[in-house]
Amino acid sequence: MQLLNCPFCGPRDQSEFTYLREAAPVPALDADTAAWHHFVYLRENQRGPHAEWWHHNHGCRQVLHIVRDTMTHEIISIESARPLEARP
Image 1 (tube, rainbow, N blue to C red):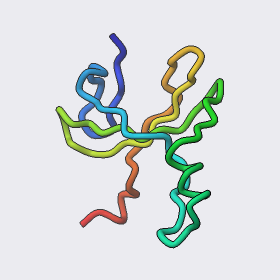
Image 2 (cartoon, rainbow, N blue to C red; image 1 turned 90 degrees about the vertical axis):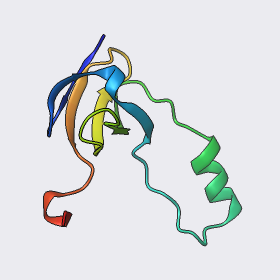
Image 3 (cartoon, rainbow, N blue to C red; image 1 turned 180 degrees about the vertical axis):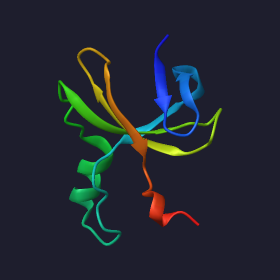
Image 4 (cartoon, rainbow, N blue to C red; image 1 turned 135 degrees about the horizontal axis):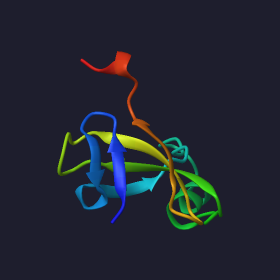
């Protein structure tokens, strides 16, 4: 079991969260096929700190930006994916 410290709900079990994808720039909608192919199918699979988006689906339902070390699974940082000033 791994605890993720949600900035809205506090420490919660990892089973409350769903991995969405790596936090990588999305190509423009009119980008060529090669750019979309690279974005969808080719992953760097890097070792060490890796930025990811997770959804707290059994809690506050917020999307979170999590930096996780892929070697140790240590959570380096967790923050809201949306800046506070952008919320209604």
